[in-house]
Length: 331
Ligand code: GLV
Image: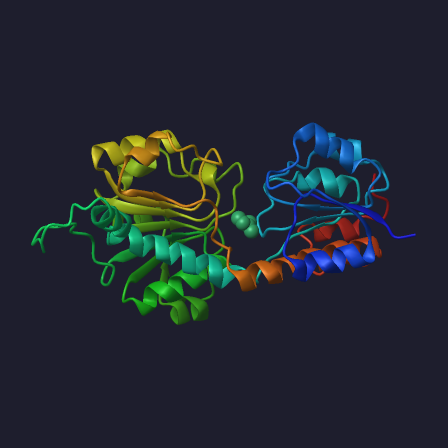
């Protein structure tokens, strides 16, 4: 009999079809995520869960699912929505979709950087609102990207791709990460490892590429904004809570921060009356960094691959908790 699985949203056919062909799938078809009570109800008795970053996977959900649950496959590279240690304790491997979205995400981060630096949305509003009367010597003056210093926080796959783009635009690149890159990688990427204080003090642009963990929550708070160059621009394509949104709002209001480009926010979704959106130099897009047709197809294939491997009792191609395979008798 085909294994029962729950797929919490429609994902691209490239992966969905693989899942539907091989399993007895309950597919949540709505555009919005399943409400919590619906999720807990539908997960009962399944062997596999294909989740999204909008689904909280914790002890309550794992209890609701039952002891037959064999695998959780998250359709995202980030997995802060999942209590991974709780899954590991129960012997459940968790998969994510690393690698395939790296360049696409860095492309969006750099697009945000350019758009905020050169005030593209303000320019577009200017035209659409019929305020364009003539060429103006002082109209919408922005910031140069070439020659500026970019501080990259989190120098993993996506942070490094950001460094490549910056280097192509003639930027100086600083980075901060708990793991230092090899001298060869630093040389190839033209990037210098620095302490966070120096990164904040010297960067014209600060771009966040770190995981969300207790250590990185509110990494950019009032104190950090205060230590940045006056007028610096902040880019976030990591997770919303890495920035304290109230502190960012105050820093934009005072001019301490010159602009922000946010793909991720806290909370998500951000409502249109959020105070950050009152600032014309704050550009917010709805968590779309990996949203290219080709990349979402590849994420869907990967998520399906993890799910189906787990159902067969095979090692997931990309587990986030490989330690699950080292425990002989999971509790
Ligand atoms: C998106 O934010 C992801 O983690 O893939």
